[in-house]
Amino acid sequence: MDLEHVGLEDMDLKNISLEYYENNADLFFQQTVTADMKSLYEPFLSQLRPSGRILDLGCGSGRDSRYFIQKGYQVEAMDGSQKLCTLASEYIGRKVVCGRIEDLDYENEFDGIWACASLVHIEKKDMLRVLERIKRALKERGVLYLSLKYGQGEGVKNGRFFNYYDEREIQKIFNELEDMNIIELLKTADVRSERRQEYWINVLAELNSETAKEKYL
Image 1 (cartoon, one colour):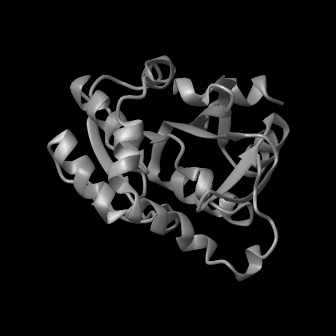
Image 2 (cartoon, rainbow, N blue to C red):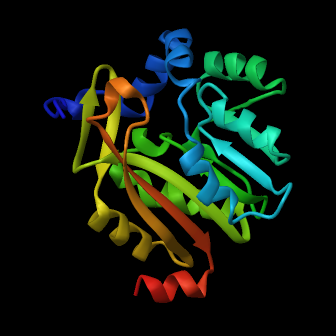
Image 3 (cartoon, rainbow, N blue to C red):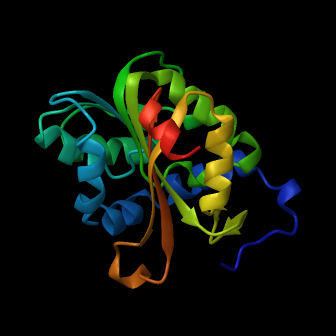
């Protein structure tokens, strides 16, 4: 993974990734806006009511928000980078909220929350607290999709901070997240052809699902 571990305590880990996106917004938009995520959209959308309300948390280019809007869902798109918010707003034709994931402050608002490759920049020590905020933003029986880089550890790579999770660590953190239960756990290769050697762990979870709870006891 070639992560930098030495000197992390001296780095501004909460802002290093945000600065990267501010400085590379145009390039990041171009590299991600055409990625084909349809195979991951369907399991998520199949759990939602038609025209349900979705929060695209860390929307980046707005690629996923645009797809959900076209499918008739009510979408709130949010990203921490002001420059990406501007690009995404232009792409999806509506305002994107500029805000940090760590400061998420909704309660009982969304049928689904889509966090595709956006929680990868959260320090592991803060992950449970962030997931608690996400859980609070969901309606009863609300569904969360999140994807994280597959592996172990955390560190800085090419100017961004990343965390890595495997199945065991995901199970452990969701066991600590009361009433949020895993429906599906899936390892997938990156959809971009030049990154096929990189893997992601995908989590689909539901708030207060007794069926899911029984499945993962």
